[in-house]
Image (cartoon, rainbow, N blue to C red; front, side):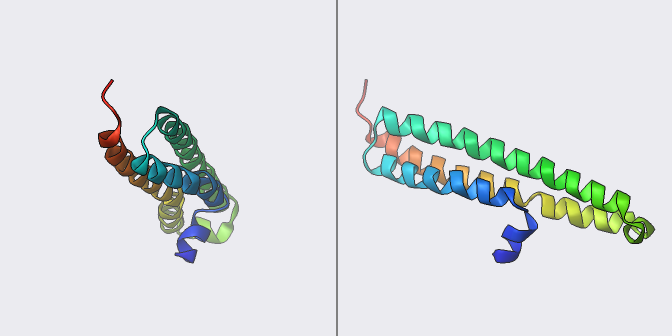
Length: 116
């Protein structure tokens, strides 16, 4: 797991900082559904999604720069590009996994909400 976090770069911590409170808020919403709780989950979900996309873009840019500027990598650039691409997907995997978990919890909470 630590290798996964390191592979994704520093944006993985941004994803976690927004993602963990989102899942906790979604769990609270599942227990005691309220419109305010749902609004907070939505907002945090957007923050996690934007952080995940930003992390992927940042990682892809870093990979491209490393391959382009290192003569050793230029000998077999495809190998390094593919490895970098795989590592660059880590923020999206983490972020969208957390969003999925949160919205599954929200689905349970929606069942508990009173009818309008």
